[in-house]
Image: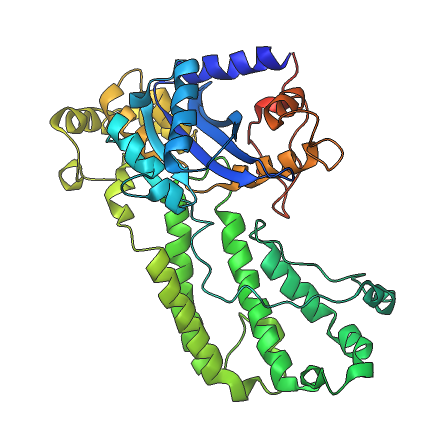
Length: 417
């Protein structure tokens, strides 16, 4: 059954005019490095995501090793490298190395591939070591609380850092009571100023979590994700202005603290530090050049940059097609350009090339959670991940992002025949 599903996925991928890849490697419980590869294709008049394969890196995890596995599987799947228009990765040296990285080997095969550094894996501007672990007996102090225990930060789950802070802050009273027996060591827990700092970090990470969640999903692309990053950057400027005026509407937990006014300068400085880091790791992208992709009927063709003559000619014809204009209001952007491809192939393919590449690795986290579930301590010596993952094709991967998988995400493992 799994072989049949794999054949269906590969057939759909081969039928797609173009495709984009999303890949990353991680080490499982047995110490084996596993490479997960996802593919985004045009299928059934829409853009969909599928799990392409899971492969074991038997010896080393160098860029050349990753390239060999990807290249060999694409050959096996009969997917020409020149049809790949984008690859999304986590930006590790093995991937991005200019000489021996995966990207350097791949560009020798297809120099036109667009490589995207996952929006969710760009470096965090705040210290990761915020929370502190406690003994299990702490749970007995939380019996009458809304939360029964503390959460622990896991680096692979990008939303957990903010959740840990929120839980830590909400359990502040229980934490203080629990640690009163060592009051000299944890004297800072009685410090209102210290808790105000924690409240601000809790508030700001909650905003970051919302941003991270918003850029996940099968309908996300580089344009929509960039819009949200740029909007967040602009909000930071607004928040700094409000904080300087001692208005903390956007930071409700901090506003509840009596001494927050004494920390206004520190909060303002932290917001600017975050803005500087966001600007560094998310450099401004002129998405105005792609307004014609979002709405081809509202732009002047003379102002569009980067189109060949045939594409401009196609765009003019499409823009003046009243029937397509009505269709545009009834469809998503993805479906519209796929629909228009039959009559206006040049400009439609150009638009699809921009919409198809992945902007994040959110499916990667779901995939590695499934690998963790499959390869338990009792099973890790029995079979390879690839064999076990083939048997799990009928089961959807578990949630790894603290939020439900985006509606519309397609996993080949969930389809039964």
